[in-house]
Image (cartoon, rainbow, N blue to C red; front, side, top):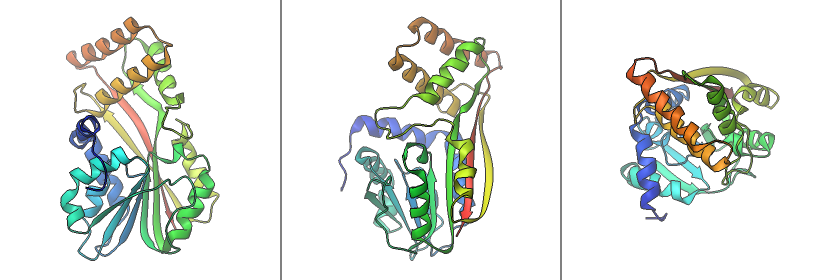
Length: 268
C-alpha cells in the first residue's frame, strides 16, 4: 500500500459510497465525459475516489484514469476501496498539489474532470489554463461544483435555516486554501473567458424527500451543524431543535432538501 490508511477516515468516507444520491450524481457526471474505452482520463482533486470508480468501468485494458489529490488520507481510502481497479491498471493515484502548475505533459489527456475542488484553488485562471495545456485536441474538461448557497431545507425555522446555510457556505475550513461557497454560479463566466471553445452549462439538482442516514440531505445537515458548532455563532439548543425539526418533518412526510450543482463542459 502506498498511502497510510487511517481507520476513522476510512469509516467516515466509506459512507459516501453508499449514499444513493451521490452514486447517481457521479454516474451522471461521468456520462457527460463521453469516455471512450482507450481514453486517458484525469480526475483532479479525486478525493476518496467516488468518481474514479465509474470512469474505470468505462475503460478497456488500454485506457487509464489518473486520480490526483493532495490529501494522503483520502488517497488511502481510494487505494483501499479501488484496489481491484488499481491492480488491473485502470486506475493510478498520485499525490500532488493542483493549485499550482500541473505536473503533466502538454496534450496528454483526452478527458479531465474536477468536482467540488475549484472553490479551494486561489488562482482559478491558472488552473483552467493548465487544464487546457494538458488536454489533447478535441479533449473535454468538465468542472463542476455545488453552489452551497442554493441549499434549501423545508424547516419550521426558516431564518435559522438561512443563517446556517450561509454560515456553512461562507466558512473557510482549515484545510482550504480559498473559500467561495457561491462558486457554482460563477463557473460559466470563468470558463467562458478562457481559451476553451463550446462552453456548455448543465445544472444538476440534488434533492431529497426523506431524512435518512444514507440520503444526501441528511448528511449535509449534520455537516452544517458541525460547522455551526465550530463557529460558536449558534446556541447548541437551537441547533438540536433544528435537527429535531427536520426529523419531525420526515415523520410527517414533509421533509425536503435541494441544492444545485453547476457543471461546465468545455472542449479544446
